[in-house]
Image 1 (spheres, rainbow, N blue to C red):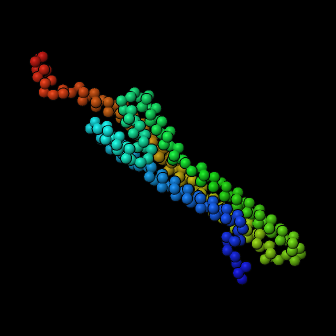
Image 2: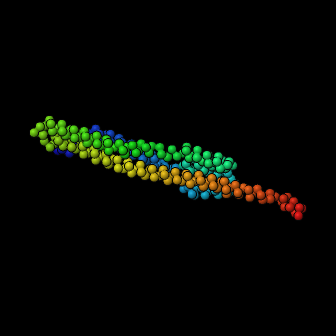
Length: 230
């Protein structure tokens, strides 16, 4: 009775251990990437509005400090623009692009490994199926005309279990990769929008506000001078 109802792990043969290892690795990669992307994704609109409010008060150092304390690539790109707020548009754009080039590859790190597991798992399952069928035919040849169903069932079980396990691993792995890739695309869009928006603000609004402040009279002495001229 015990031999007719073995566990799935034993019936699947050595290929099952390979699939279990791939499944554990995929799970670890998925959890690590989800936590990393969750920490790196901030509310970019609210964050940028807060930075603009600080800059409107001409407190550049405080705005840079806020960017340093905030996680994620959006804050890093905004900080790069702030550090070059007095430069021209070309230099500021290069600084923002350099910051994005440094930050964005970290978002896609290990996604390729998860995609590879999703593609390799069915092939490993196919290998288990082939080995199971080979076991079945060997049992059939050894048994000859008197080969029993029990003798042939071991190889068939191995073929079916490894194929089913491989598909059960590959489908969630594909879904996990698709989900993570979508999160990465969302962060990339936030980075692009934040970079363009902070550049527009620094080049137009921030500098215009600075010009207006410099054009205002600096003290009571300027008013008296104006009266004397009149």
